[in-house]
Length: 430
Image (cartoon, one colour):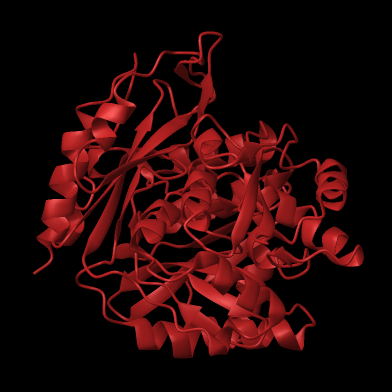
C-alpha cells in the first residue's frame, strides 16, 4: 500500500512538488493544505491554512499520514516540525531552531561569520533611530549604494538597495516605522552592496550529509532590466550555463554552515537554499533560506529525474548518502504571470484566467498554479499576486525560453504582467 503524504503549501512551489510526488510509485494518496485550483488535479486539497499548526497536526493524526512535506517558510518558523516530531510523525523540514538561519538575518550573518562563510560586511540595526543615523552617516561619506533588509520573514520583499539618502530613509520608514512587513521589521540589517549576478543554490540535507541541486537564477525585480521593487520572484532558469563553482559552494558554504548548525544543536534536515552573489572574489552569500525556493522549485521539479518521495524519506530517515539523485539533461525555465499591482497587496482577485490548457498542449510545457482558485462556475480565476508559473524544458536555454514565452502568449487574464527578459543576463555571458 502506498504512502499517505501531506504537502503543506498553497502556491506554485507546492503545485510543482505535488506534481513530482505523484509520479512516485511509492505514493498512495496526496493531500495538499491548503493547495490551489491547480493542485486539485494531483490529490485532495485540505481546507486548513499552512499556518494552522494545530489543524494540520489533527489532520495528520486522523488520516495517519506517513510523511508531511513542508513547502512554506512560515510553518517552519512557527515550529511545525517540532510539533509533529513530538507526536512521532515523520516530517520533512528543519526544526524551528534550525530554520532560524532564514527567520533571522542577524542570526544568519553571525553564523556565517563564525563559520568563515563569505558574505558582505553588515551592521545590525535594532530601532529606527539607529537606522536613520546609520544611513545618514553612510550617504554623508559616500555615494555607494547600500543594502537594507528586514531581519525576519518578508515573503522575499523586505530587501532594498537604495542609492540615495532619500531612498534609504524611505526603506527604513517602510521596514521599521510603517511596518510593511510586520514583526519582520523589529530589527534590520545594513550590508555592503556586492556587484555581480545572483545564483540560487539548493541542497537536500539529512542532518549529516547533503547533496546539491543544479544551479538556478531567479529574477526578483518586478520589471525588465531588474527595475522596480523586489517580488517573490518573477522567473527562473536552471541550470545557470556559466556557473561552475559548485565545488566552492559545497566546501566553503553549505558544508561549513551545516557543521556550524550542528555544533549549536540545530541539526538541519530539509532543503537548505543559499542565495549567492557571484562577485569578482567568488561566490558570496546574500542570505539563507530553510526551504524550497519559489519559483526555483518549479524548474527543479521539471529537471529532477529521480523519485522525489524516496529522496525526502531518505533525508528524514538520515540515509541521504545512500540515494543516487539524477537530473535530466538540458534546461528548464519558468516565467511568472502576475496580477496587475503586484508586488503591492493592492491587486484584484477573482479575475477570469483563460488559455492554461492551450499552453500545456505545447511540447515541453507545464503550467503551475500559484494564486488561483475556482469561481462558482468551476472556472480558473486569480487569487493572489503571483498567479501562474509557465515552465518549459529544452535541450538549450534559448530553446526552453522560446517555448515558455510561446506558452505565455496562450494565457490571458485582465491586468496580467510578466517579465520579457527572463534568462537574458545568462544568455549574454560568453
